[in-house]
Each structure stands twice: as structure tokens, then as C-alpha cells.
Length: 417
Ligand code: ATP
Ligand code: MG
Image (cartoon, rainbow, N blue to C red; front, top):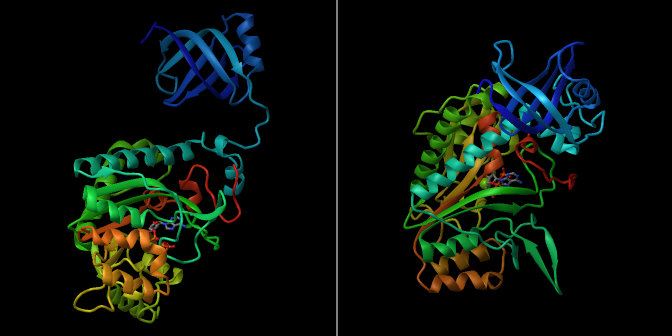
């Protein structure tokens, strides 16, 4: 574009005054360019340059010049610079990356933090991940659905629900689209949803938030083996696309991402207990695999893997027990090192069994009346899973804290910004 006249809009990232010659690094959503004010420029330009500070929004009119010394081999010689909006100086957050800033402080000034190369890289990878996921579901003939987030009763029981005042009644924020997506398999057969769910997580961990975006899927006439196959293909595609399309971003994050080999290993819950026991971690059959044990597994297994056939009592009521051994369920967790990425399974599609399982869990079938009655109207066998998108992003980008994988995280203590 040598010699072309351009008008650029963006943010002042750096200004450097070398006396006679002055530089601005201008940033927009696609990248950065050097604006060079040569000694021959007008006094007005120099005066405007003096007023500039970091993150001012400016308009630059000028001419493109090929310059091997400039960062991208090209610079713009301005004829006019207008300050569209001033930013305060100093800014409340150090953006150069030279000083290490605590995550909590970064989150307090999240909009500024998101302009750093690191945060930007994370969410550009997230975008490629989401595009890939949507395309994959479309290719596989799924229908995208949206289920209600204000609900009358708990999906899975438990205490993780946020109550909301709903006119003159109490309602809850949905912790999962589970029951609705199951019902929808009797209409569309294959459905998926990408939407927020809410979990009143009391504990303050690096992998739990109270509002998360969940990727939920459910398919008729499939079982948990089909869903594991599907998850594996989906993840494999995400790895491929991120590696193909996000090399610059991965470099910013210093992440050397390799595409894990398929098929991913599938261990049964009992096998995992054995692996753990051989490595000095004892877990009683039937108990959940706690954080300490997960950390141990993460040390032993680096690639994605499945833990399947969990004890029926450790899984929600809608998970199907195995026919050959009802103590064990047709369920799985998809793991990446120590991190649980997804949970899924074959669902119960027979009404009587469903009612029994609800009772066994100590809940009242009447509270699920709206759901149970749909099982009288032609419910196909079905299976599905829920993938925590921020967890997946954490795994791909190698983040230690889920808060970095969400634009505006919500946890036990954080409700702003
Ligand atoms: P965990 O055992 O890690 O608390 P879970 O088994 O309670 O998770 P599921 O109900 O299985 O969670 O939800 C499906 C997926 O959603 C999980 O595998 C995880 O990726 C994600 N997820 C669940 N709860 C949270 C949360 N509070 N914060 C972030 N991601 C979550
Ligand atoms: Mg789970």
C-alpha cells in the first residue's frame, strides 16, 4: 500500500519521543502499526503528540510508507491526528506487562486488562474454539436450542441453586439445561445449547465459578459410548483448528500446544481407583475422586482421557444404571490432566426407573412432574453431556485459574465488574 492515503482509528499503545522524530504505536482490533512523525512535520502535529497518553482514542490520517525498520515493515506518516477521546493518565492498571500485576487487580480493571496481549490471545483462541464447536454441531445435524434459565425446581437437587424472587413466588437460576434438553430429544433428536448456567459454589477454587457458559448436547438413540466418541472427535477438531489458526496467540501465551493422539484412553472408575492406589492415594469404591486425587491423576496422565462407569450413587438421578450391574452407571467424565472438562452419560428413558431413582436420591417425584409426564409421550433412549467451556479453554491455553478464561468472572466474592 506504499503511497496510499489512509485514515486509521484506534488506541495509543505507546508513544516514544526521540526529540526530532516521534513515534506512536496505534492499536486496533486487528493489530498494531507505527505512526512516525518526522522532523519535517508541522508544529501542530508535535503539539498534539505532546498531549497524547496511553489508551487515548485517536484518528490518524496519513500516507503509508514501506520501512524495513518499522515493526511490520510498514509505517504511516501522518498529516493529521485528532484526539477523539482522552484516557486518564496514569491508568489504574499497568498494561506493559513489565510489572507483574495480581489477577485480582487485573480483574478489577478487566476492560483495560483485556487489552493486554495475553488476555487478548486467550479470548481470540476462545473465539476459534466456539466457531469450531458450532460448525461441528452443524455438520453433525444438531439443532441449536435455548432452554429457560429461570426455573421452578432444582434440576439435580442439591444446594448449588441460586434462588430468585419471581413475582410472588420463589424461582431458581438453572444449574443445567439437563431436563429440557432430554425432553427435546423426543422432538429434534439431536440438540445442543451454548448458554450460561448458575452454580452457587460456596468453595473458592481455581476451577469453579458461579456463572459459567456450558456447552450441552443430547442425542436420541445414542448411548454413552457414542457420546464419548463424539466428544473425542469434537475435541480433536478444536485442537486442530486452534493449532492451525492461533499460532500467534499461542506464542503470546508461551504455549506449545500439541494435538493429543486419538483415541483418548478410557479408564473405568474402578481402574482409576487402582491407578491411584498404586500411587499411594486410596479412595473407597463409591466415593468421589477428590481434588488431591485428581492432582495425582494429572501428574500421571497428561493427555485427555475418560473416566467411565462411575458408581450409580455418585451420579445424578437421570443417569442410567448398567443393566448387567446396577451399582455401576453408564456415565463418564472427560478429563484433561487433573481438570474435569465434561460429564455425560446414557440417560434413563423409562418412567418407572426414573421415578425410583428420584426417590432413591431422597427427592420428591412430584417436583419433577412437568418432566416425568413427558416420558409417557414417546421418549427415545438418549444420551448426552455437558462441557464446561471455560474449563476447556483453560486446558487448551494452559491457564492455572478459570478466572482468566472468563471475560467477567463471577465467584463467591466477585460480583463486579
Ligand atoms: P466439578 O466436579 O468439577 O465441580 P461437576 O461434576 O459438579 O464439576 P457437572 O455438573 O458435571 O459439574 O458440569 C459439567 C461441566 O461443567 C463440568 O465437567 C465442568 O467442566 C463444568 N463446570 C461445572 N461446574 C462448574 C463451575 N462451578 N465452574 C466452572 N465450570 C464448571
Ligand atoms: Mg461432573
